[in-house]
Image (cartoon, rainbow, N blue to C red):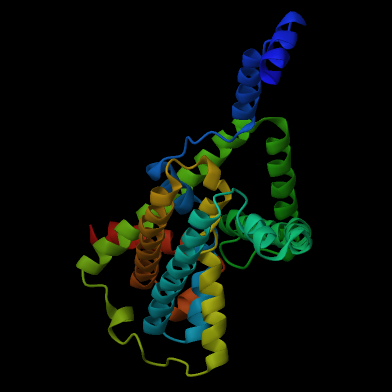
Amino acid sequence: MDEKRVEKSSTQNGINPTATLSHTSKDEKATMLQKEVGLVSGVCLIVGTMIGSGIFISPKAVLQGTGAVGPSLCVWAACGVLATLGALCYAELGTMITKSGGEYPYLMEAFGPLLGFLYSWTTIIVLKPSSFAIIALSCAEYAATPFYPACTPPQLVIKSLAAAFIMLICLVNSLSVKLAKYVQNFFTAAKLLIILIIVLAGIVLLAQGNTQNLSNGFEGATTSFGAIGLAFYNGLWAYDGWNQLNFITEELKNPYRNLPLAIMIGIPLVSVCYVLVNVAYFTVMTPAELLQSSAVAVVSVGMATSSLLLSG
């Protein structure tokens, strides 16, 4: 009886309860993240985020830590296994707590808002800017190397270029989201093309018998746990990004299936790619040449091209 009086009174006052509920549900739907990321897009996000400057700068540090070609390749494969195991743990978290944001919602649920805030503050103030600076310095070193073929580029030139790249990226992201998307897609395609060229050149040279750097791969290997640990540290830097899919869990279609499946496809794919790239490096460069090089990918592509032209 009371419900009928309320409904009648609301109708008399010009308020339609059904319309109000419908309008509220539409507003709630409009503010929710749309589930538009499928399995293929999830795999592309993992692969595109992981493959970056690490594969072009870490081989030198990994080889320096291991001391030989064989242990270096083992470290790259082991780092892929570690990244896969860590990502599978995150897949379990992502299917238990289906919220976007990566580590932030997990820390919020487990330890409360204080630790979640501290993590966010540390990420914004320390982790992301330092990572951005390292990537900018690596990009600047590769950009300056062709102009200094006989020596290492001066630090002033590298740092100036890195500062210019940081300002340019900030400007692009501030001006237009669409422009930033186009720039990101262009550079993602460029680095994938470079990796494909390096791998194909390595396969061709291996088929031609250039295996002298791989035949005695474990000769001169280091036995220092500290050096091997440092090699693992540098190798895992190249695998950074394996947790990026957990930042958009709410946008995944059927996250209970697609989140772990995308991880099990994407990270092993990147691991195989990294191992093949390092094998390709050692088909055209000796360990000593790799350690002396400031831009491994540039030197290896140039030497591979020369070798292929001479053999052809």
